[in-house]
Length: 232
Ligand code: SAH
Image (cartoon, rainbow, N blue to C red; front, side, top):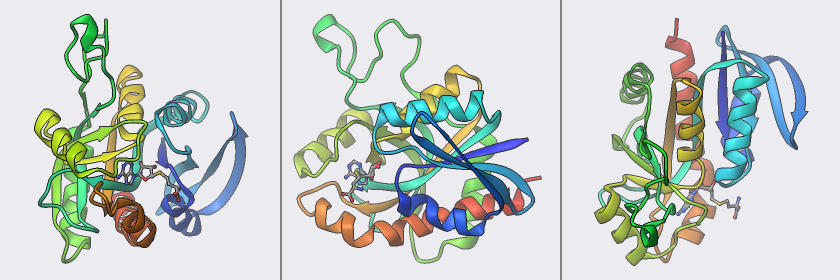
């Protein structure tokens, strides 16, 4: 069994790579895949790059070429739920694309035309495991299970955040999760997305992101490693 682990940026995968043994690297579609072992599990760790297209390509290759039978995503996000603070954890219950908009044709906001679903549910067992690990390993941060919103936009606007919260009841916003979720769903592969808050997606998001990306990425990494420790 191979577990695929995706991060979008270096900060999100570098700690994982240093926890891995027996590493071999393969490049496909300009994306680097690192096969190896973490806590006795065969894993493939990769950096998708930013955005939904990169994340989709990366996930399909993980499934087809590396036979990933589970997919975990580790990374940072902007808070949408106003109660969340820097470093807090969101475990995906489900994911959707907040920038999918065919409302002019009569579809609902977020709805993918001619598809039977647009909210992609994460795997219950992986959610339960992530939540148990977070409770045990992450101190002094809120841990919530919620909806992850993805779009090809770095959100840095208070008004937009408010809209995202009211329209879609999202917990956080980022740029890859819903793409990973959709590809996994279409291939029947269980997944969970773990995000730690790097910014509040408001006017300070740009500077907060730069300041806290490392701290937040490390919080998310701890959960992934804890999950691998406890998986049978
Ligand atoms: N590496 C770039 C920024 C990448 S974009 C830089 O250094 O400037 C931000 C990345 O973090 C994306 O992968 C996205 O998933 C996540 N992210 C964090 N905060 C976000 C926000 N407010 N809006 C959208 N994505 C956010």
